[in-house]
Image (cartoon, rainbow, N blue to C red; front, side, top):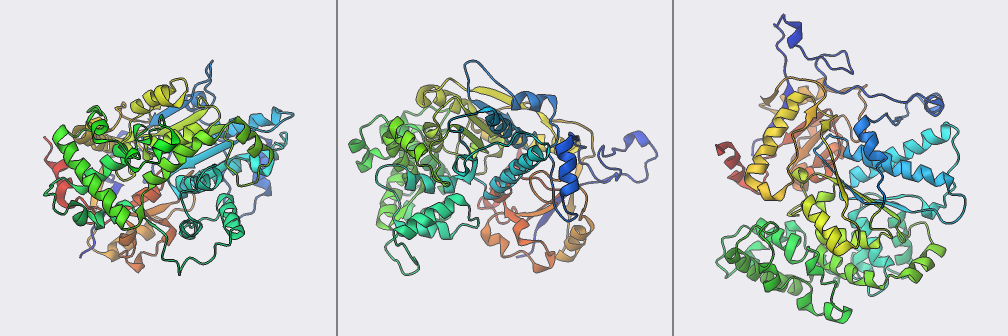
Length: 561
């Protein structure tokens, strides 16, 4: 198959004599670059940090946020309320989250006695998680160099930065009650991880105590039913049904509603009743009763989907599979066993990798979490009014997760035991000029047109300076693309969360088809999920549409009137 490459860039009319028509980058004298000028507080800590750093050290200093961001970072209410922060890509949601997390952590220096409040940061993207942790640590370095008071916090009380997969695995080990995973299954999950943090090390130490060794010879463990496995087995699932419903839609209804909604957890039932297999998901009657604002399927479609779901559950059981919703259901039931005395005992005997208790919770890219996952997260936070959730439903890239902020606010009120959270918005884009933002606004309009009930409406992003319209460049071969990459390498621009260049592909399999001549660091060839929340100077989409499981359906966007 021939390589299909789409590169979106900016062009200039070099023949124009009207200087007013030129758009110069305010942070650089190169007219071909459009990156914002950032301001840094040059205090004593920053000066010492710069003087002490080595020439080859990649040192990031915390920059000065704008007035709106400053307001969000220090936002307080009486009584205290959790915050839901909405904003499109590049509006500074992650930056606000990191600054707010640090401001809260720095305030602990004034706590003279007693245990320190414990913070937890969770996101789906492993790369974003490590970048946020790095940014937070740099703030700490600047704090110490400034000569500020040392924050005397035990290692086990320091903020933890983990992915949702790490969080679920750790909870399965830490919560009271029967574990979901066997030791062999847990060891298998850990072996797939790229990052070996304190949480992973803690689980490995526990497995070592339980004498869980090599899993390569084990044949009794279950396999996870991911979306890719589901698609591979889709023909078997629909066999004999005659259904014409797309498998992606069925997976979305299963993950978001039939098994992934708060109602599907049946937390109001006694533990013994929750162990009954038929109580581990919505009944047909409960599924049919969902309002159309949640599931957009009509009654006929829902009945058909539910039959397919029952076939899916049967195949999953016979094939020795589990899915992530089964794990979340197990954890939700065990949360009821966590009481005040249990948390006091955990706090007294805290170890470095323990997650509980949690006093303050920060979640980035919250739109990638199911309602059931958010329920578990919130119930484990000692104060449901001390959460900071940031995201954007127009960037929902987790496979088949249906999420809306308006639904979350209602869930807080009905299920989480907290005050309805405050919804804040960011509208100024700090990543791109207005020329790119106008194109992005057109894409969002298409999302409103085709999937209006699936995302929250926001005003269009406001650019801080103008710029030319992007152009689609038709690259005929790998050699031409290689020349573009080599000519676009930058040495001076500063990126807060990411790197200079990235090649984005559809899936892991597509990475293997990338020509070696590109000379790209494999760490910066990413799927959409891996690149989420990061920023780059140059972004190339490689075989993005030809590798799409939607095949030619995406062409419907070009036919919109």
